[in-house]
Length: 276
Image (cartoon, rainbow, N blue to C red):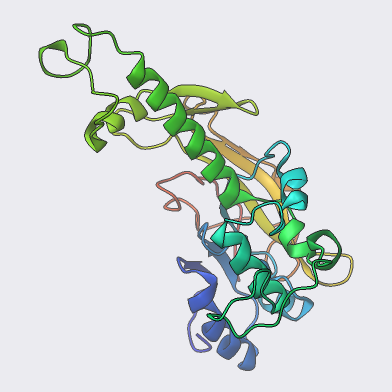
């Protein structure tokens, strides 16, 4: 990349593959590149350290929408092996976090846990629910399945959507039958509409994330806009241009080349950059 004349780079990669590349990139001390990141990278906290800002500051891209899951934090605080003695995942969590077994047996070589281990006090990463993008989408998916099953069960014989106006058998549901109802769900969670288009794809909703310098020199992921696929044409994209910090710590720029027209199927169609 040192010999390349490109000043804008679109990167579709996750943090796992980006790590060795970025290590070499930083070793060569290459700066001044404007990165456009996919959703797999744009919220990767592993790159939020202050050592990354000179090379990755100004990165912008679409991130999976984050949202609030009511009572999730309270539930996480209540998790412990005594409360869920038959939950294998809780056992594995304790073994991974504390290096001990809550219920020792001849199968495991780990020492016994004391019973005093506290997730709240020792593992803030586990308790961090401020940006549960993946968890929030799983949360919505569970609700979508629940709504689909509810509508499937309420089907009246002779008025169903399948052959000869039949309904699905509630004790023998085929995946394609559930898929039919899944594509027709329409409900709201936290003010967000959850539904699917005619092709069965979920209606897109993205946060626009910008990597900016924090107070301690680290990288902070700042929301500078959104894309809402439920809005009318011309109103889907909202960008707070005055909040964007570009590569090289630039807050303002003009343009001769539009660098965003093809990102996310023309979701980000604005042009404000010129790279000399």
